[in-house]
Length: 356
Image 1 (cartoon, rainbow, N blue to C red):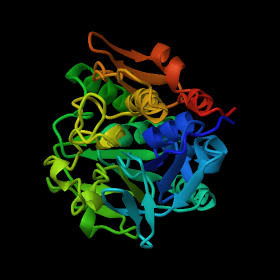
Image 2 (cartoon, rainbow, N blue to C red):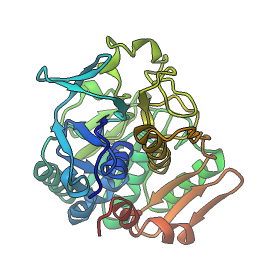
Image 3 (cartoon, rainbow, N blue to C red):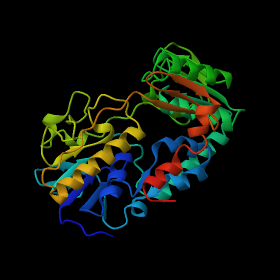
Image 4 (cartoon, one colour):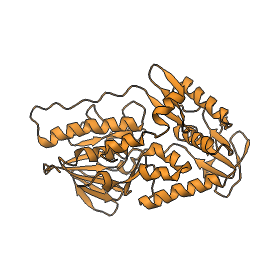
């Protein structure tokens, strides 16, 4: 292991962006990772893990596996001060450079073992149900419907989505292809309808949509959007840099509000682009280069500028198919599925963290 510079970099958030950055710079600085979980979870794999729990053994990774030489503080950050981050226990963690990567929280389960058990529970829930309702027709809802439809073709699936089309963040053509694929797998799709999720419970077997339609299901999964993980910043020194959506306003070097030593990467940024794992990785790799220059004090070093990525989206449909939207082309079916659906890029993600 290389010797650090003595500068302290604190990273808040152990998702895609935070984990990749921590792994990339741990040899050049005293890096501290603050995360409420003891593990990193590859988020796009958790749907496959519900139908095949063993899949999570490779996609749920203890922070210490890829971040071996530095410190992990398993706690929630609750405040940012000019020279320190404050945790839920009142601990002050000093920093020379701060990186905020709290994006979208995918799980609130603290221990890896308990997270793996939750996948087992979800799997049993699917196995024991003859009919299942999925609420939400974004990426998570569509991909979960695809996973269940392929692995459990005998299940009666109903997907309820409040919008006029599935996958509203991508183009109409890709959305239509996903809908056509789901219907071909006998998934009933109810568009422009919603479920009052606050009024339902696990014991319910009948659910009424906003249009008055009755959905009968033995179980359900909520796949609605998660809030941005920035509530803890609302009373901090960074509150003036939060936009109306709760995202941090950053410049082309990921600096928050132009501050010289505070950065943000991943889904929490206001960069106008699709929020997805590949993008978060790019953020982390570019910021890693810039932090290396700053920490080492490279004279005249010009920071790398980030250019928003071109629109591109991958939607896995079971184990063999996918819909892929590029800026100029939409492709669906078996060929794009070959590149992602089998392994979901888990091997590539693990390799980027130095794992087998």
